Length: 254
Ligand SMILES: Cc1cc2nc3c(=O)[nH]c(=O)nc-3n(C[C@H](O)[C@H](O)[C@H](O)COP(=O)(O)O)c2cc1C
Image (cartoon, rainbow, N blue to C red; front, side, top):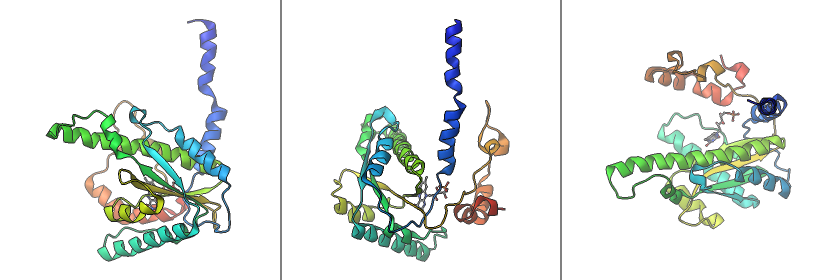
């Protein structure tokens, strides 16, 4: 290998750039209450969606649409819906520690995200109605959802880079919700609203939530059995830890 090629390898050790990225990655924190009086400049919306535009996607389908919501009444309506959904879940006995959705109503930054699931046809599928086709379609749907998440994450990181606290809301899979909200934004029937991104200056400082340690998620060459949780472990985790890791500062999770 030539000396010049070897020197090039320095390109792959740009720790300063990595550290700058990690400052944003680590600093992205969920917050559910924002300064209602703040107005997000139009350029910030553009910068955030510009970051989303560069997301990777299966077969480069880019199956995403971002709808910036500026109408306070519409934000209020959506927030109200989520608050009602919170009550419904409680009544259904879901035992999910549902967050307080009140902050949605006045979130200064508000973006509704729609996915075009028809693009699953662009992924490897048979389209012949067979059992094998069904399995490929499940995989194709996963590809599409991963693509959406990749783009949405870029949007969240961009908002965090601008200094905003962010909130990723996904609780709107059900048909009835689609029917209620699509007309508000003239979203065509063929698309699905899957996420709402709220952001803005936080009312109270964001706090860092618990993250698993590196060794708990990282494996070399083989899956480390120490990292395996049995079904019972997971049930126990949900029972004793989920509510803590969702709503507490990482330093307060025992
Ligand atoms: C795919 C996804 C779905 C989420 N859905 C919701 C949601 O519907 N409502 C909500 O309040 N938070 C939601 N969150 C936020 C998580 O609760 C939050 O990311 C998690 O508690 C970790 O906190 P952090 O974002 O500060 O690291 C979601 C996050 C992701 C990535």
